[in-house]
Length: 57
Image (cartoon, rainbow, N blue to C red; front, side, top):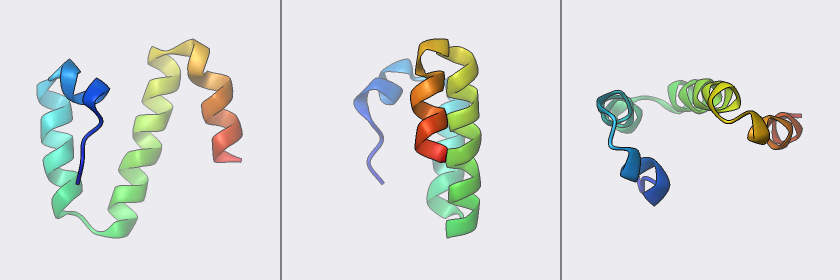
């Protein structure tokens, strides 16, 4: 799995652990993690909230 450069640049331990789990997990687990990351991104980057919300609908 390719990790986007912007996310890799953050280099947080939490993301590294999550990406390892993502590679080992089933498809449903991946979708759940992606959804949780989307929700977290909305809280971290409020300007992206509208785009993320419209993408989920």
